[in-house]
Image (cartoon, rainbow, N blue to C red):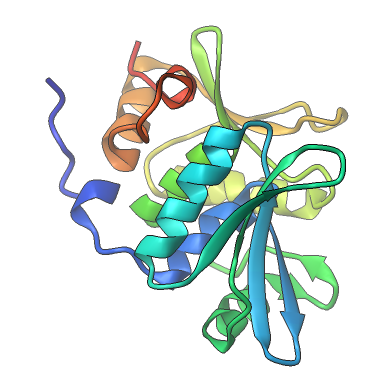
Length: 193
């Protein structure tokens, strides 16, 4: 039986700002005349379903769909309520990490759902290969919440932040809480060991 951290995703109320966890991963935000939308392409259907459930918990509508290539996508509704988040994470047409951003437990949970995966004895949080300028600030943000990662794969198509060591992985597990329902989610979820 695991013990919840006082700063666990399971102890916080969902907030729209938590969708920044999707932007820390490979997610994108788009602004239109009627508001903004956050969407993320993910490698498995369970991830899109779990992300949509988390978006719904913030009070926004969400849908999971599939691209023309058959890749799962999770996205929020277009709403003015997401405009501030879009502006914080955009520098012109380029995604950028807001100065001083710290992932909330729920943002970190969304990041794990969207792009987390075990890597042997390590755990990796995927980064957006099309936004390399976000990699170092995201590494720093994780350090500031007590999870010091190593930046890996920056020259390849799968850059990530690798979390090594029992203490750091335990901190991650305590922060993000229990996995979404399903065997696929459990297999991709971080563990202390």
